[in-house]
Image (cartoon, rainbow, N blue to C red):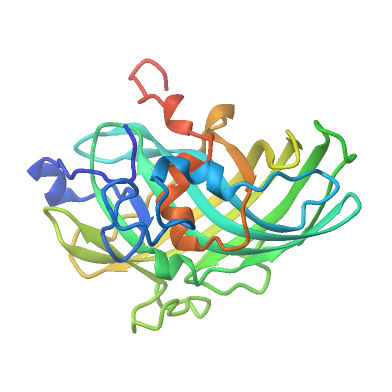
Length: 306
């Protein structure tokens, strides 16, 4: 089940308890990667969506990795669903960023721009909360902005250094400081200046409302250069997601996350792009651009497994 356009099919009893949030960061409009005949999101107006990878990828070498790259990463966590379900479930986080790389031999310096983030439930219990992409784009990463290739040959190894992303909170030490759990904590900020604490996420579906969140996302990775156009590898992460409040009773429920270490669900991919690419193009054409697809490996938890 692909998560990007989730149909809300919750039972009424779940709406009254509202204990599980499946988070999807997407654009303010409801545009679909394949459902729009307008070609403005393409570099070449007469190209089809299926040609995105061919259009976007410059033929490059490891000796010249300068320019724009697109990144997709996936992370997976377990959470516990309270009553009436009282069972564990699996979440998959997917992030999309633009990288601008400057190369000096085997050293790669880069800046990043967040484009989108989705967090979806593997189990067939559908609920949706949207963090608009314009809010995700406000995020900035803290940490090293260099990584080093072991060589300039295909198959060279590369370390993806630790990066920290904070949504709705400012911490003196973004890695070790405790994450705030209440809206009154002085570390909480109004992330998008809407007079609500933290990040405001919009609940869509049969139940309408807002929930206010503080999020810390720490990630790093180890991988290899397949060639001059693609880097991929394994991801490690530490995610904290705290609910600060909501505008409806029953929505301000805290979910505790435990890492799911299944290798196929924790990976990253970097793909070379032409310099004209934008976040909007990355969002709408990600399905054609990236080979990374954790959903082909994701399966719901059975009662006998956990």
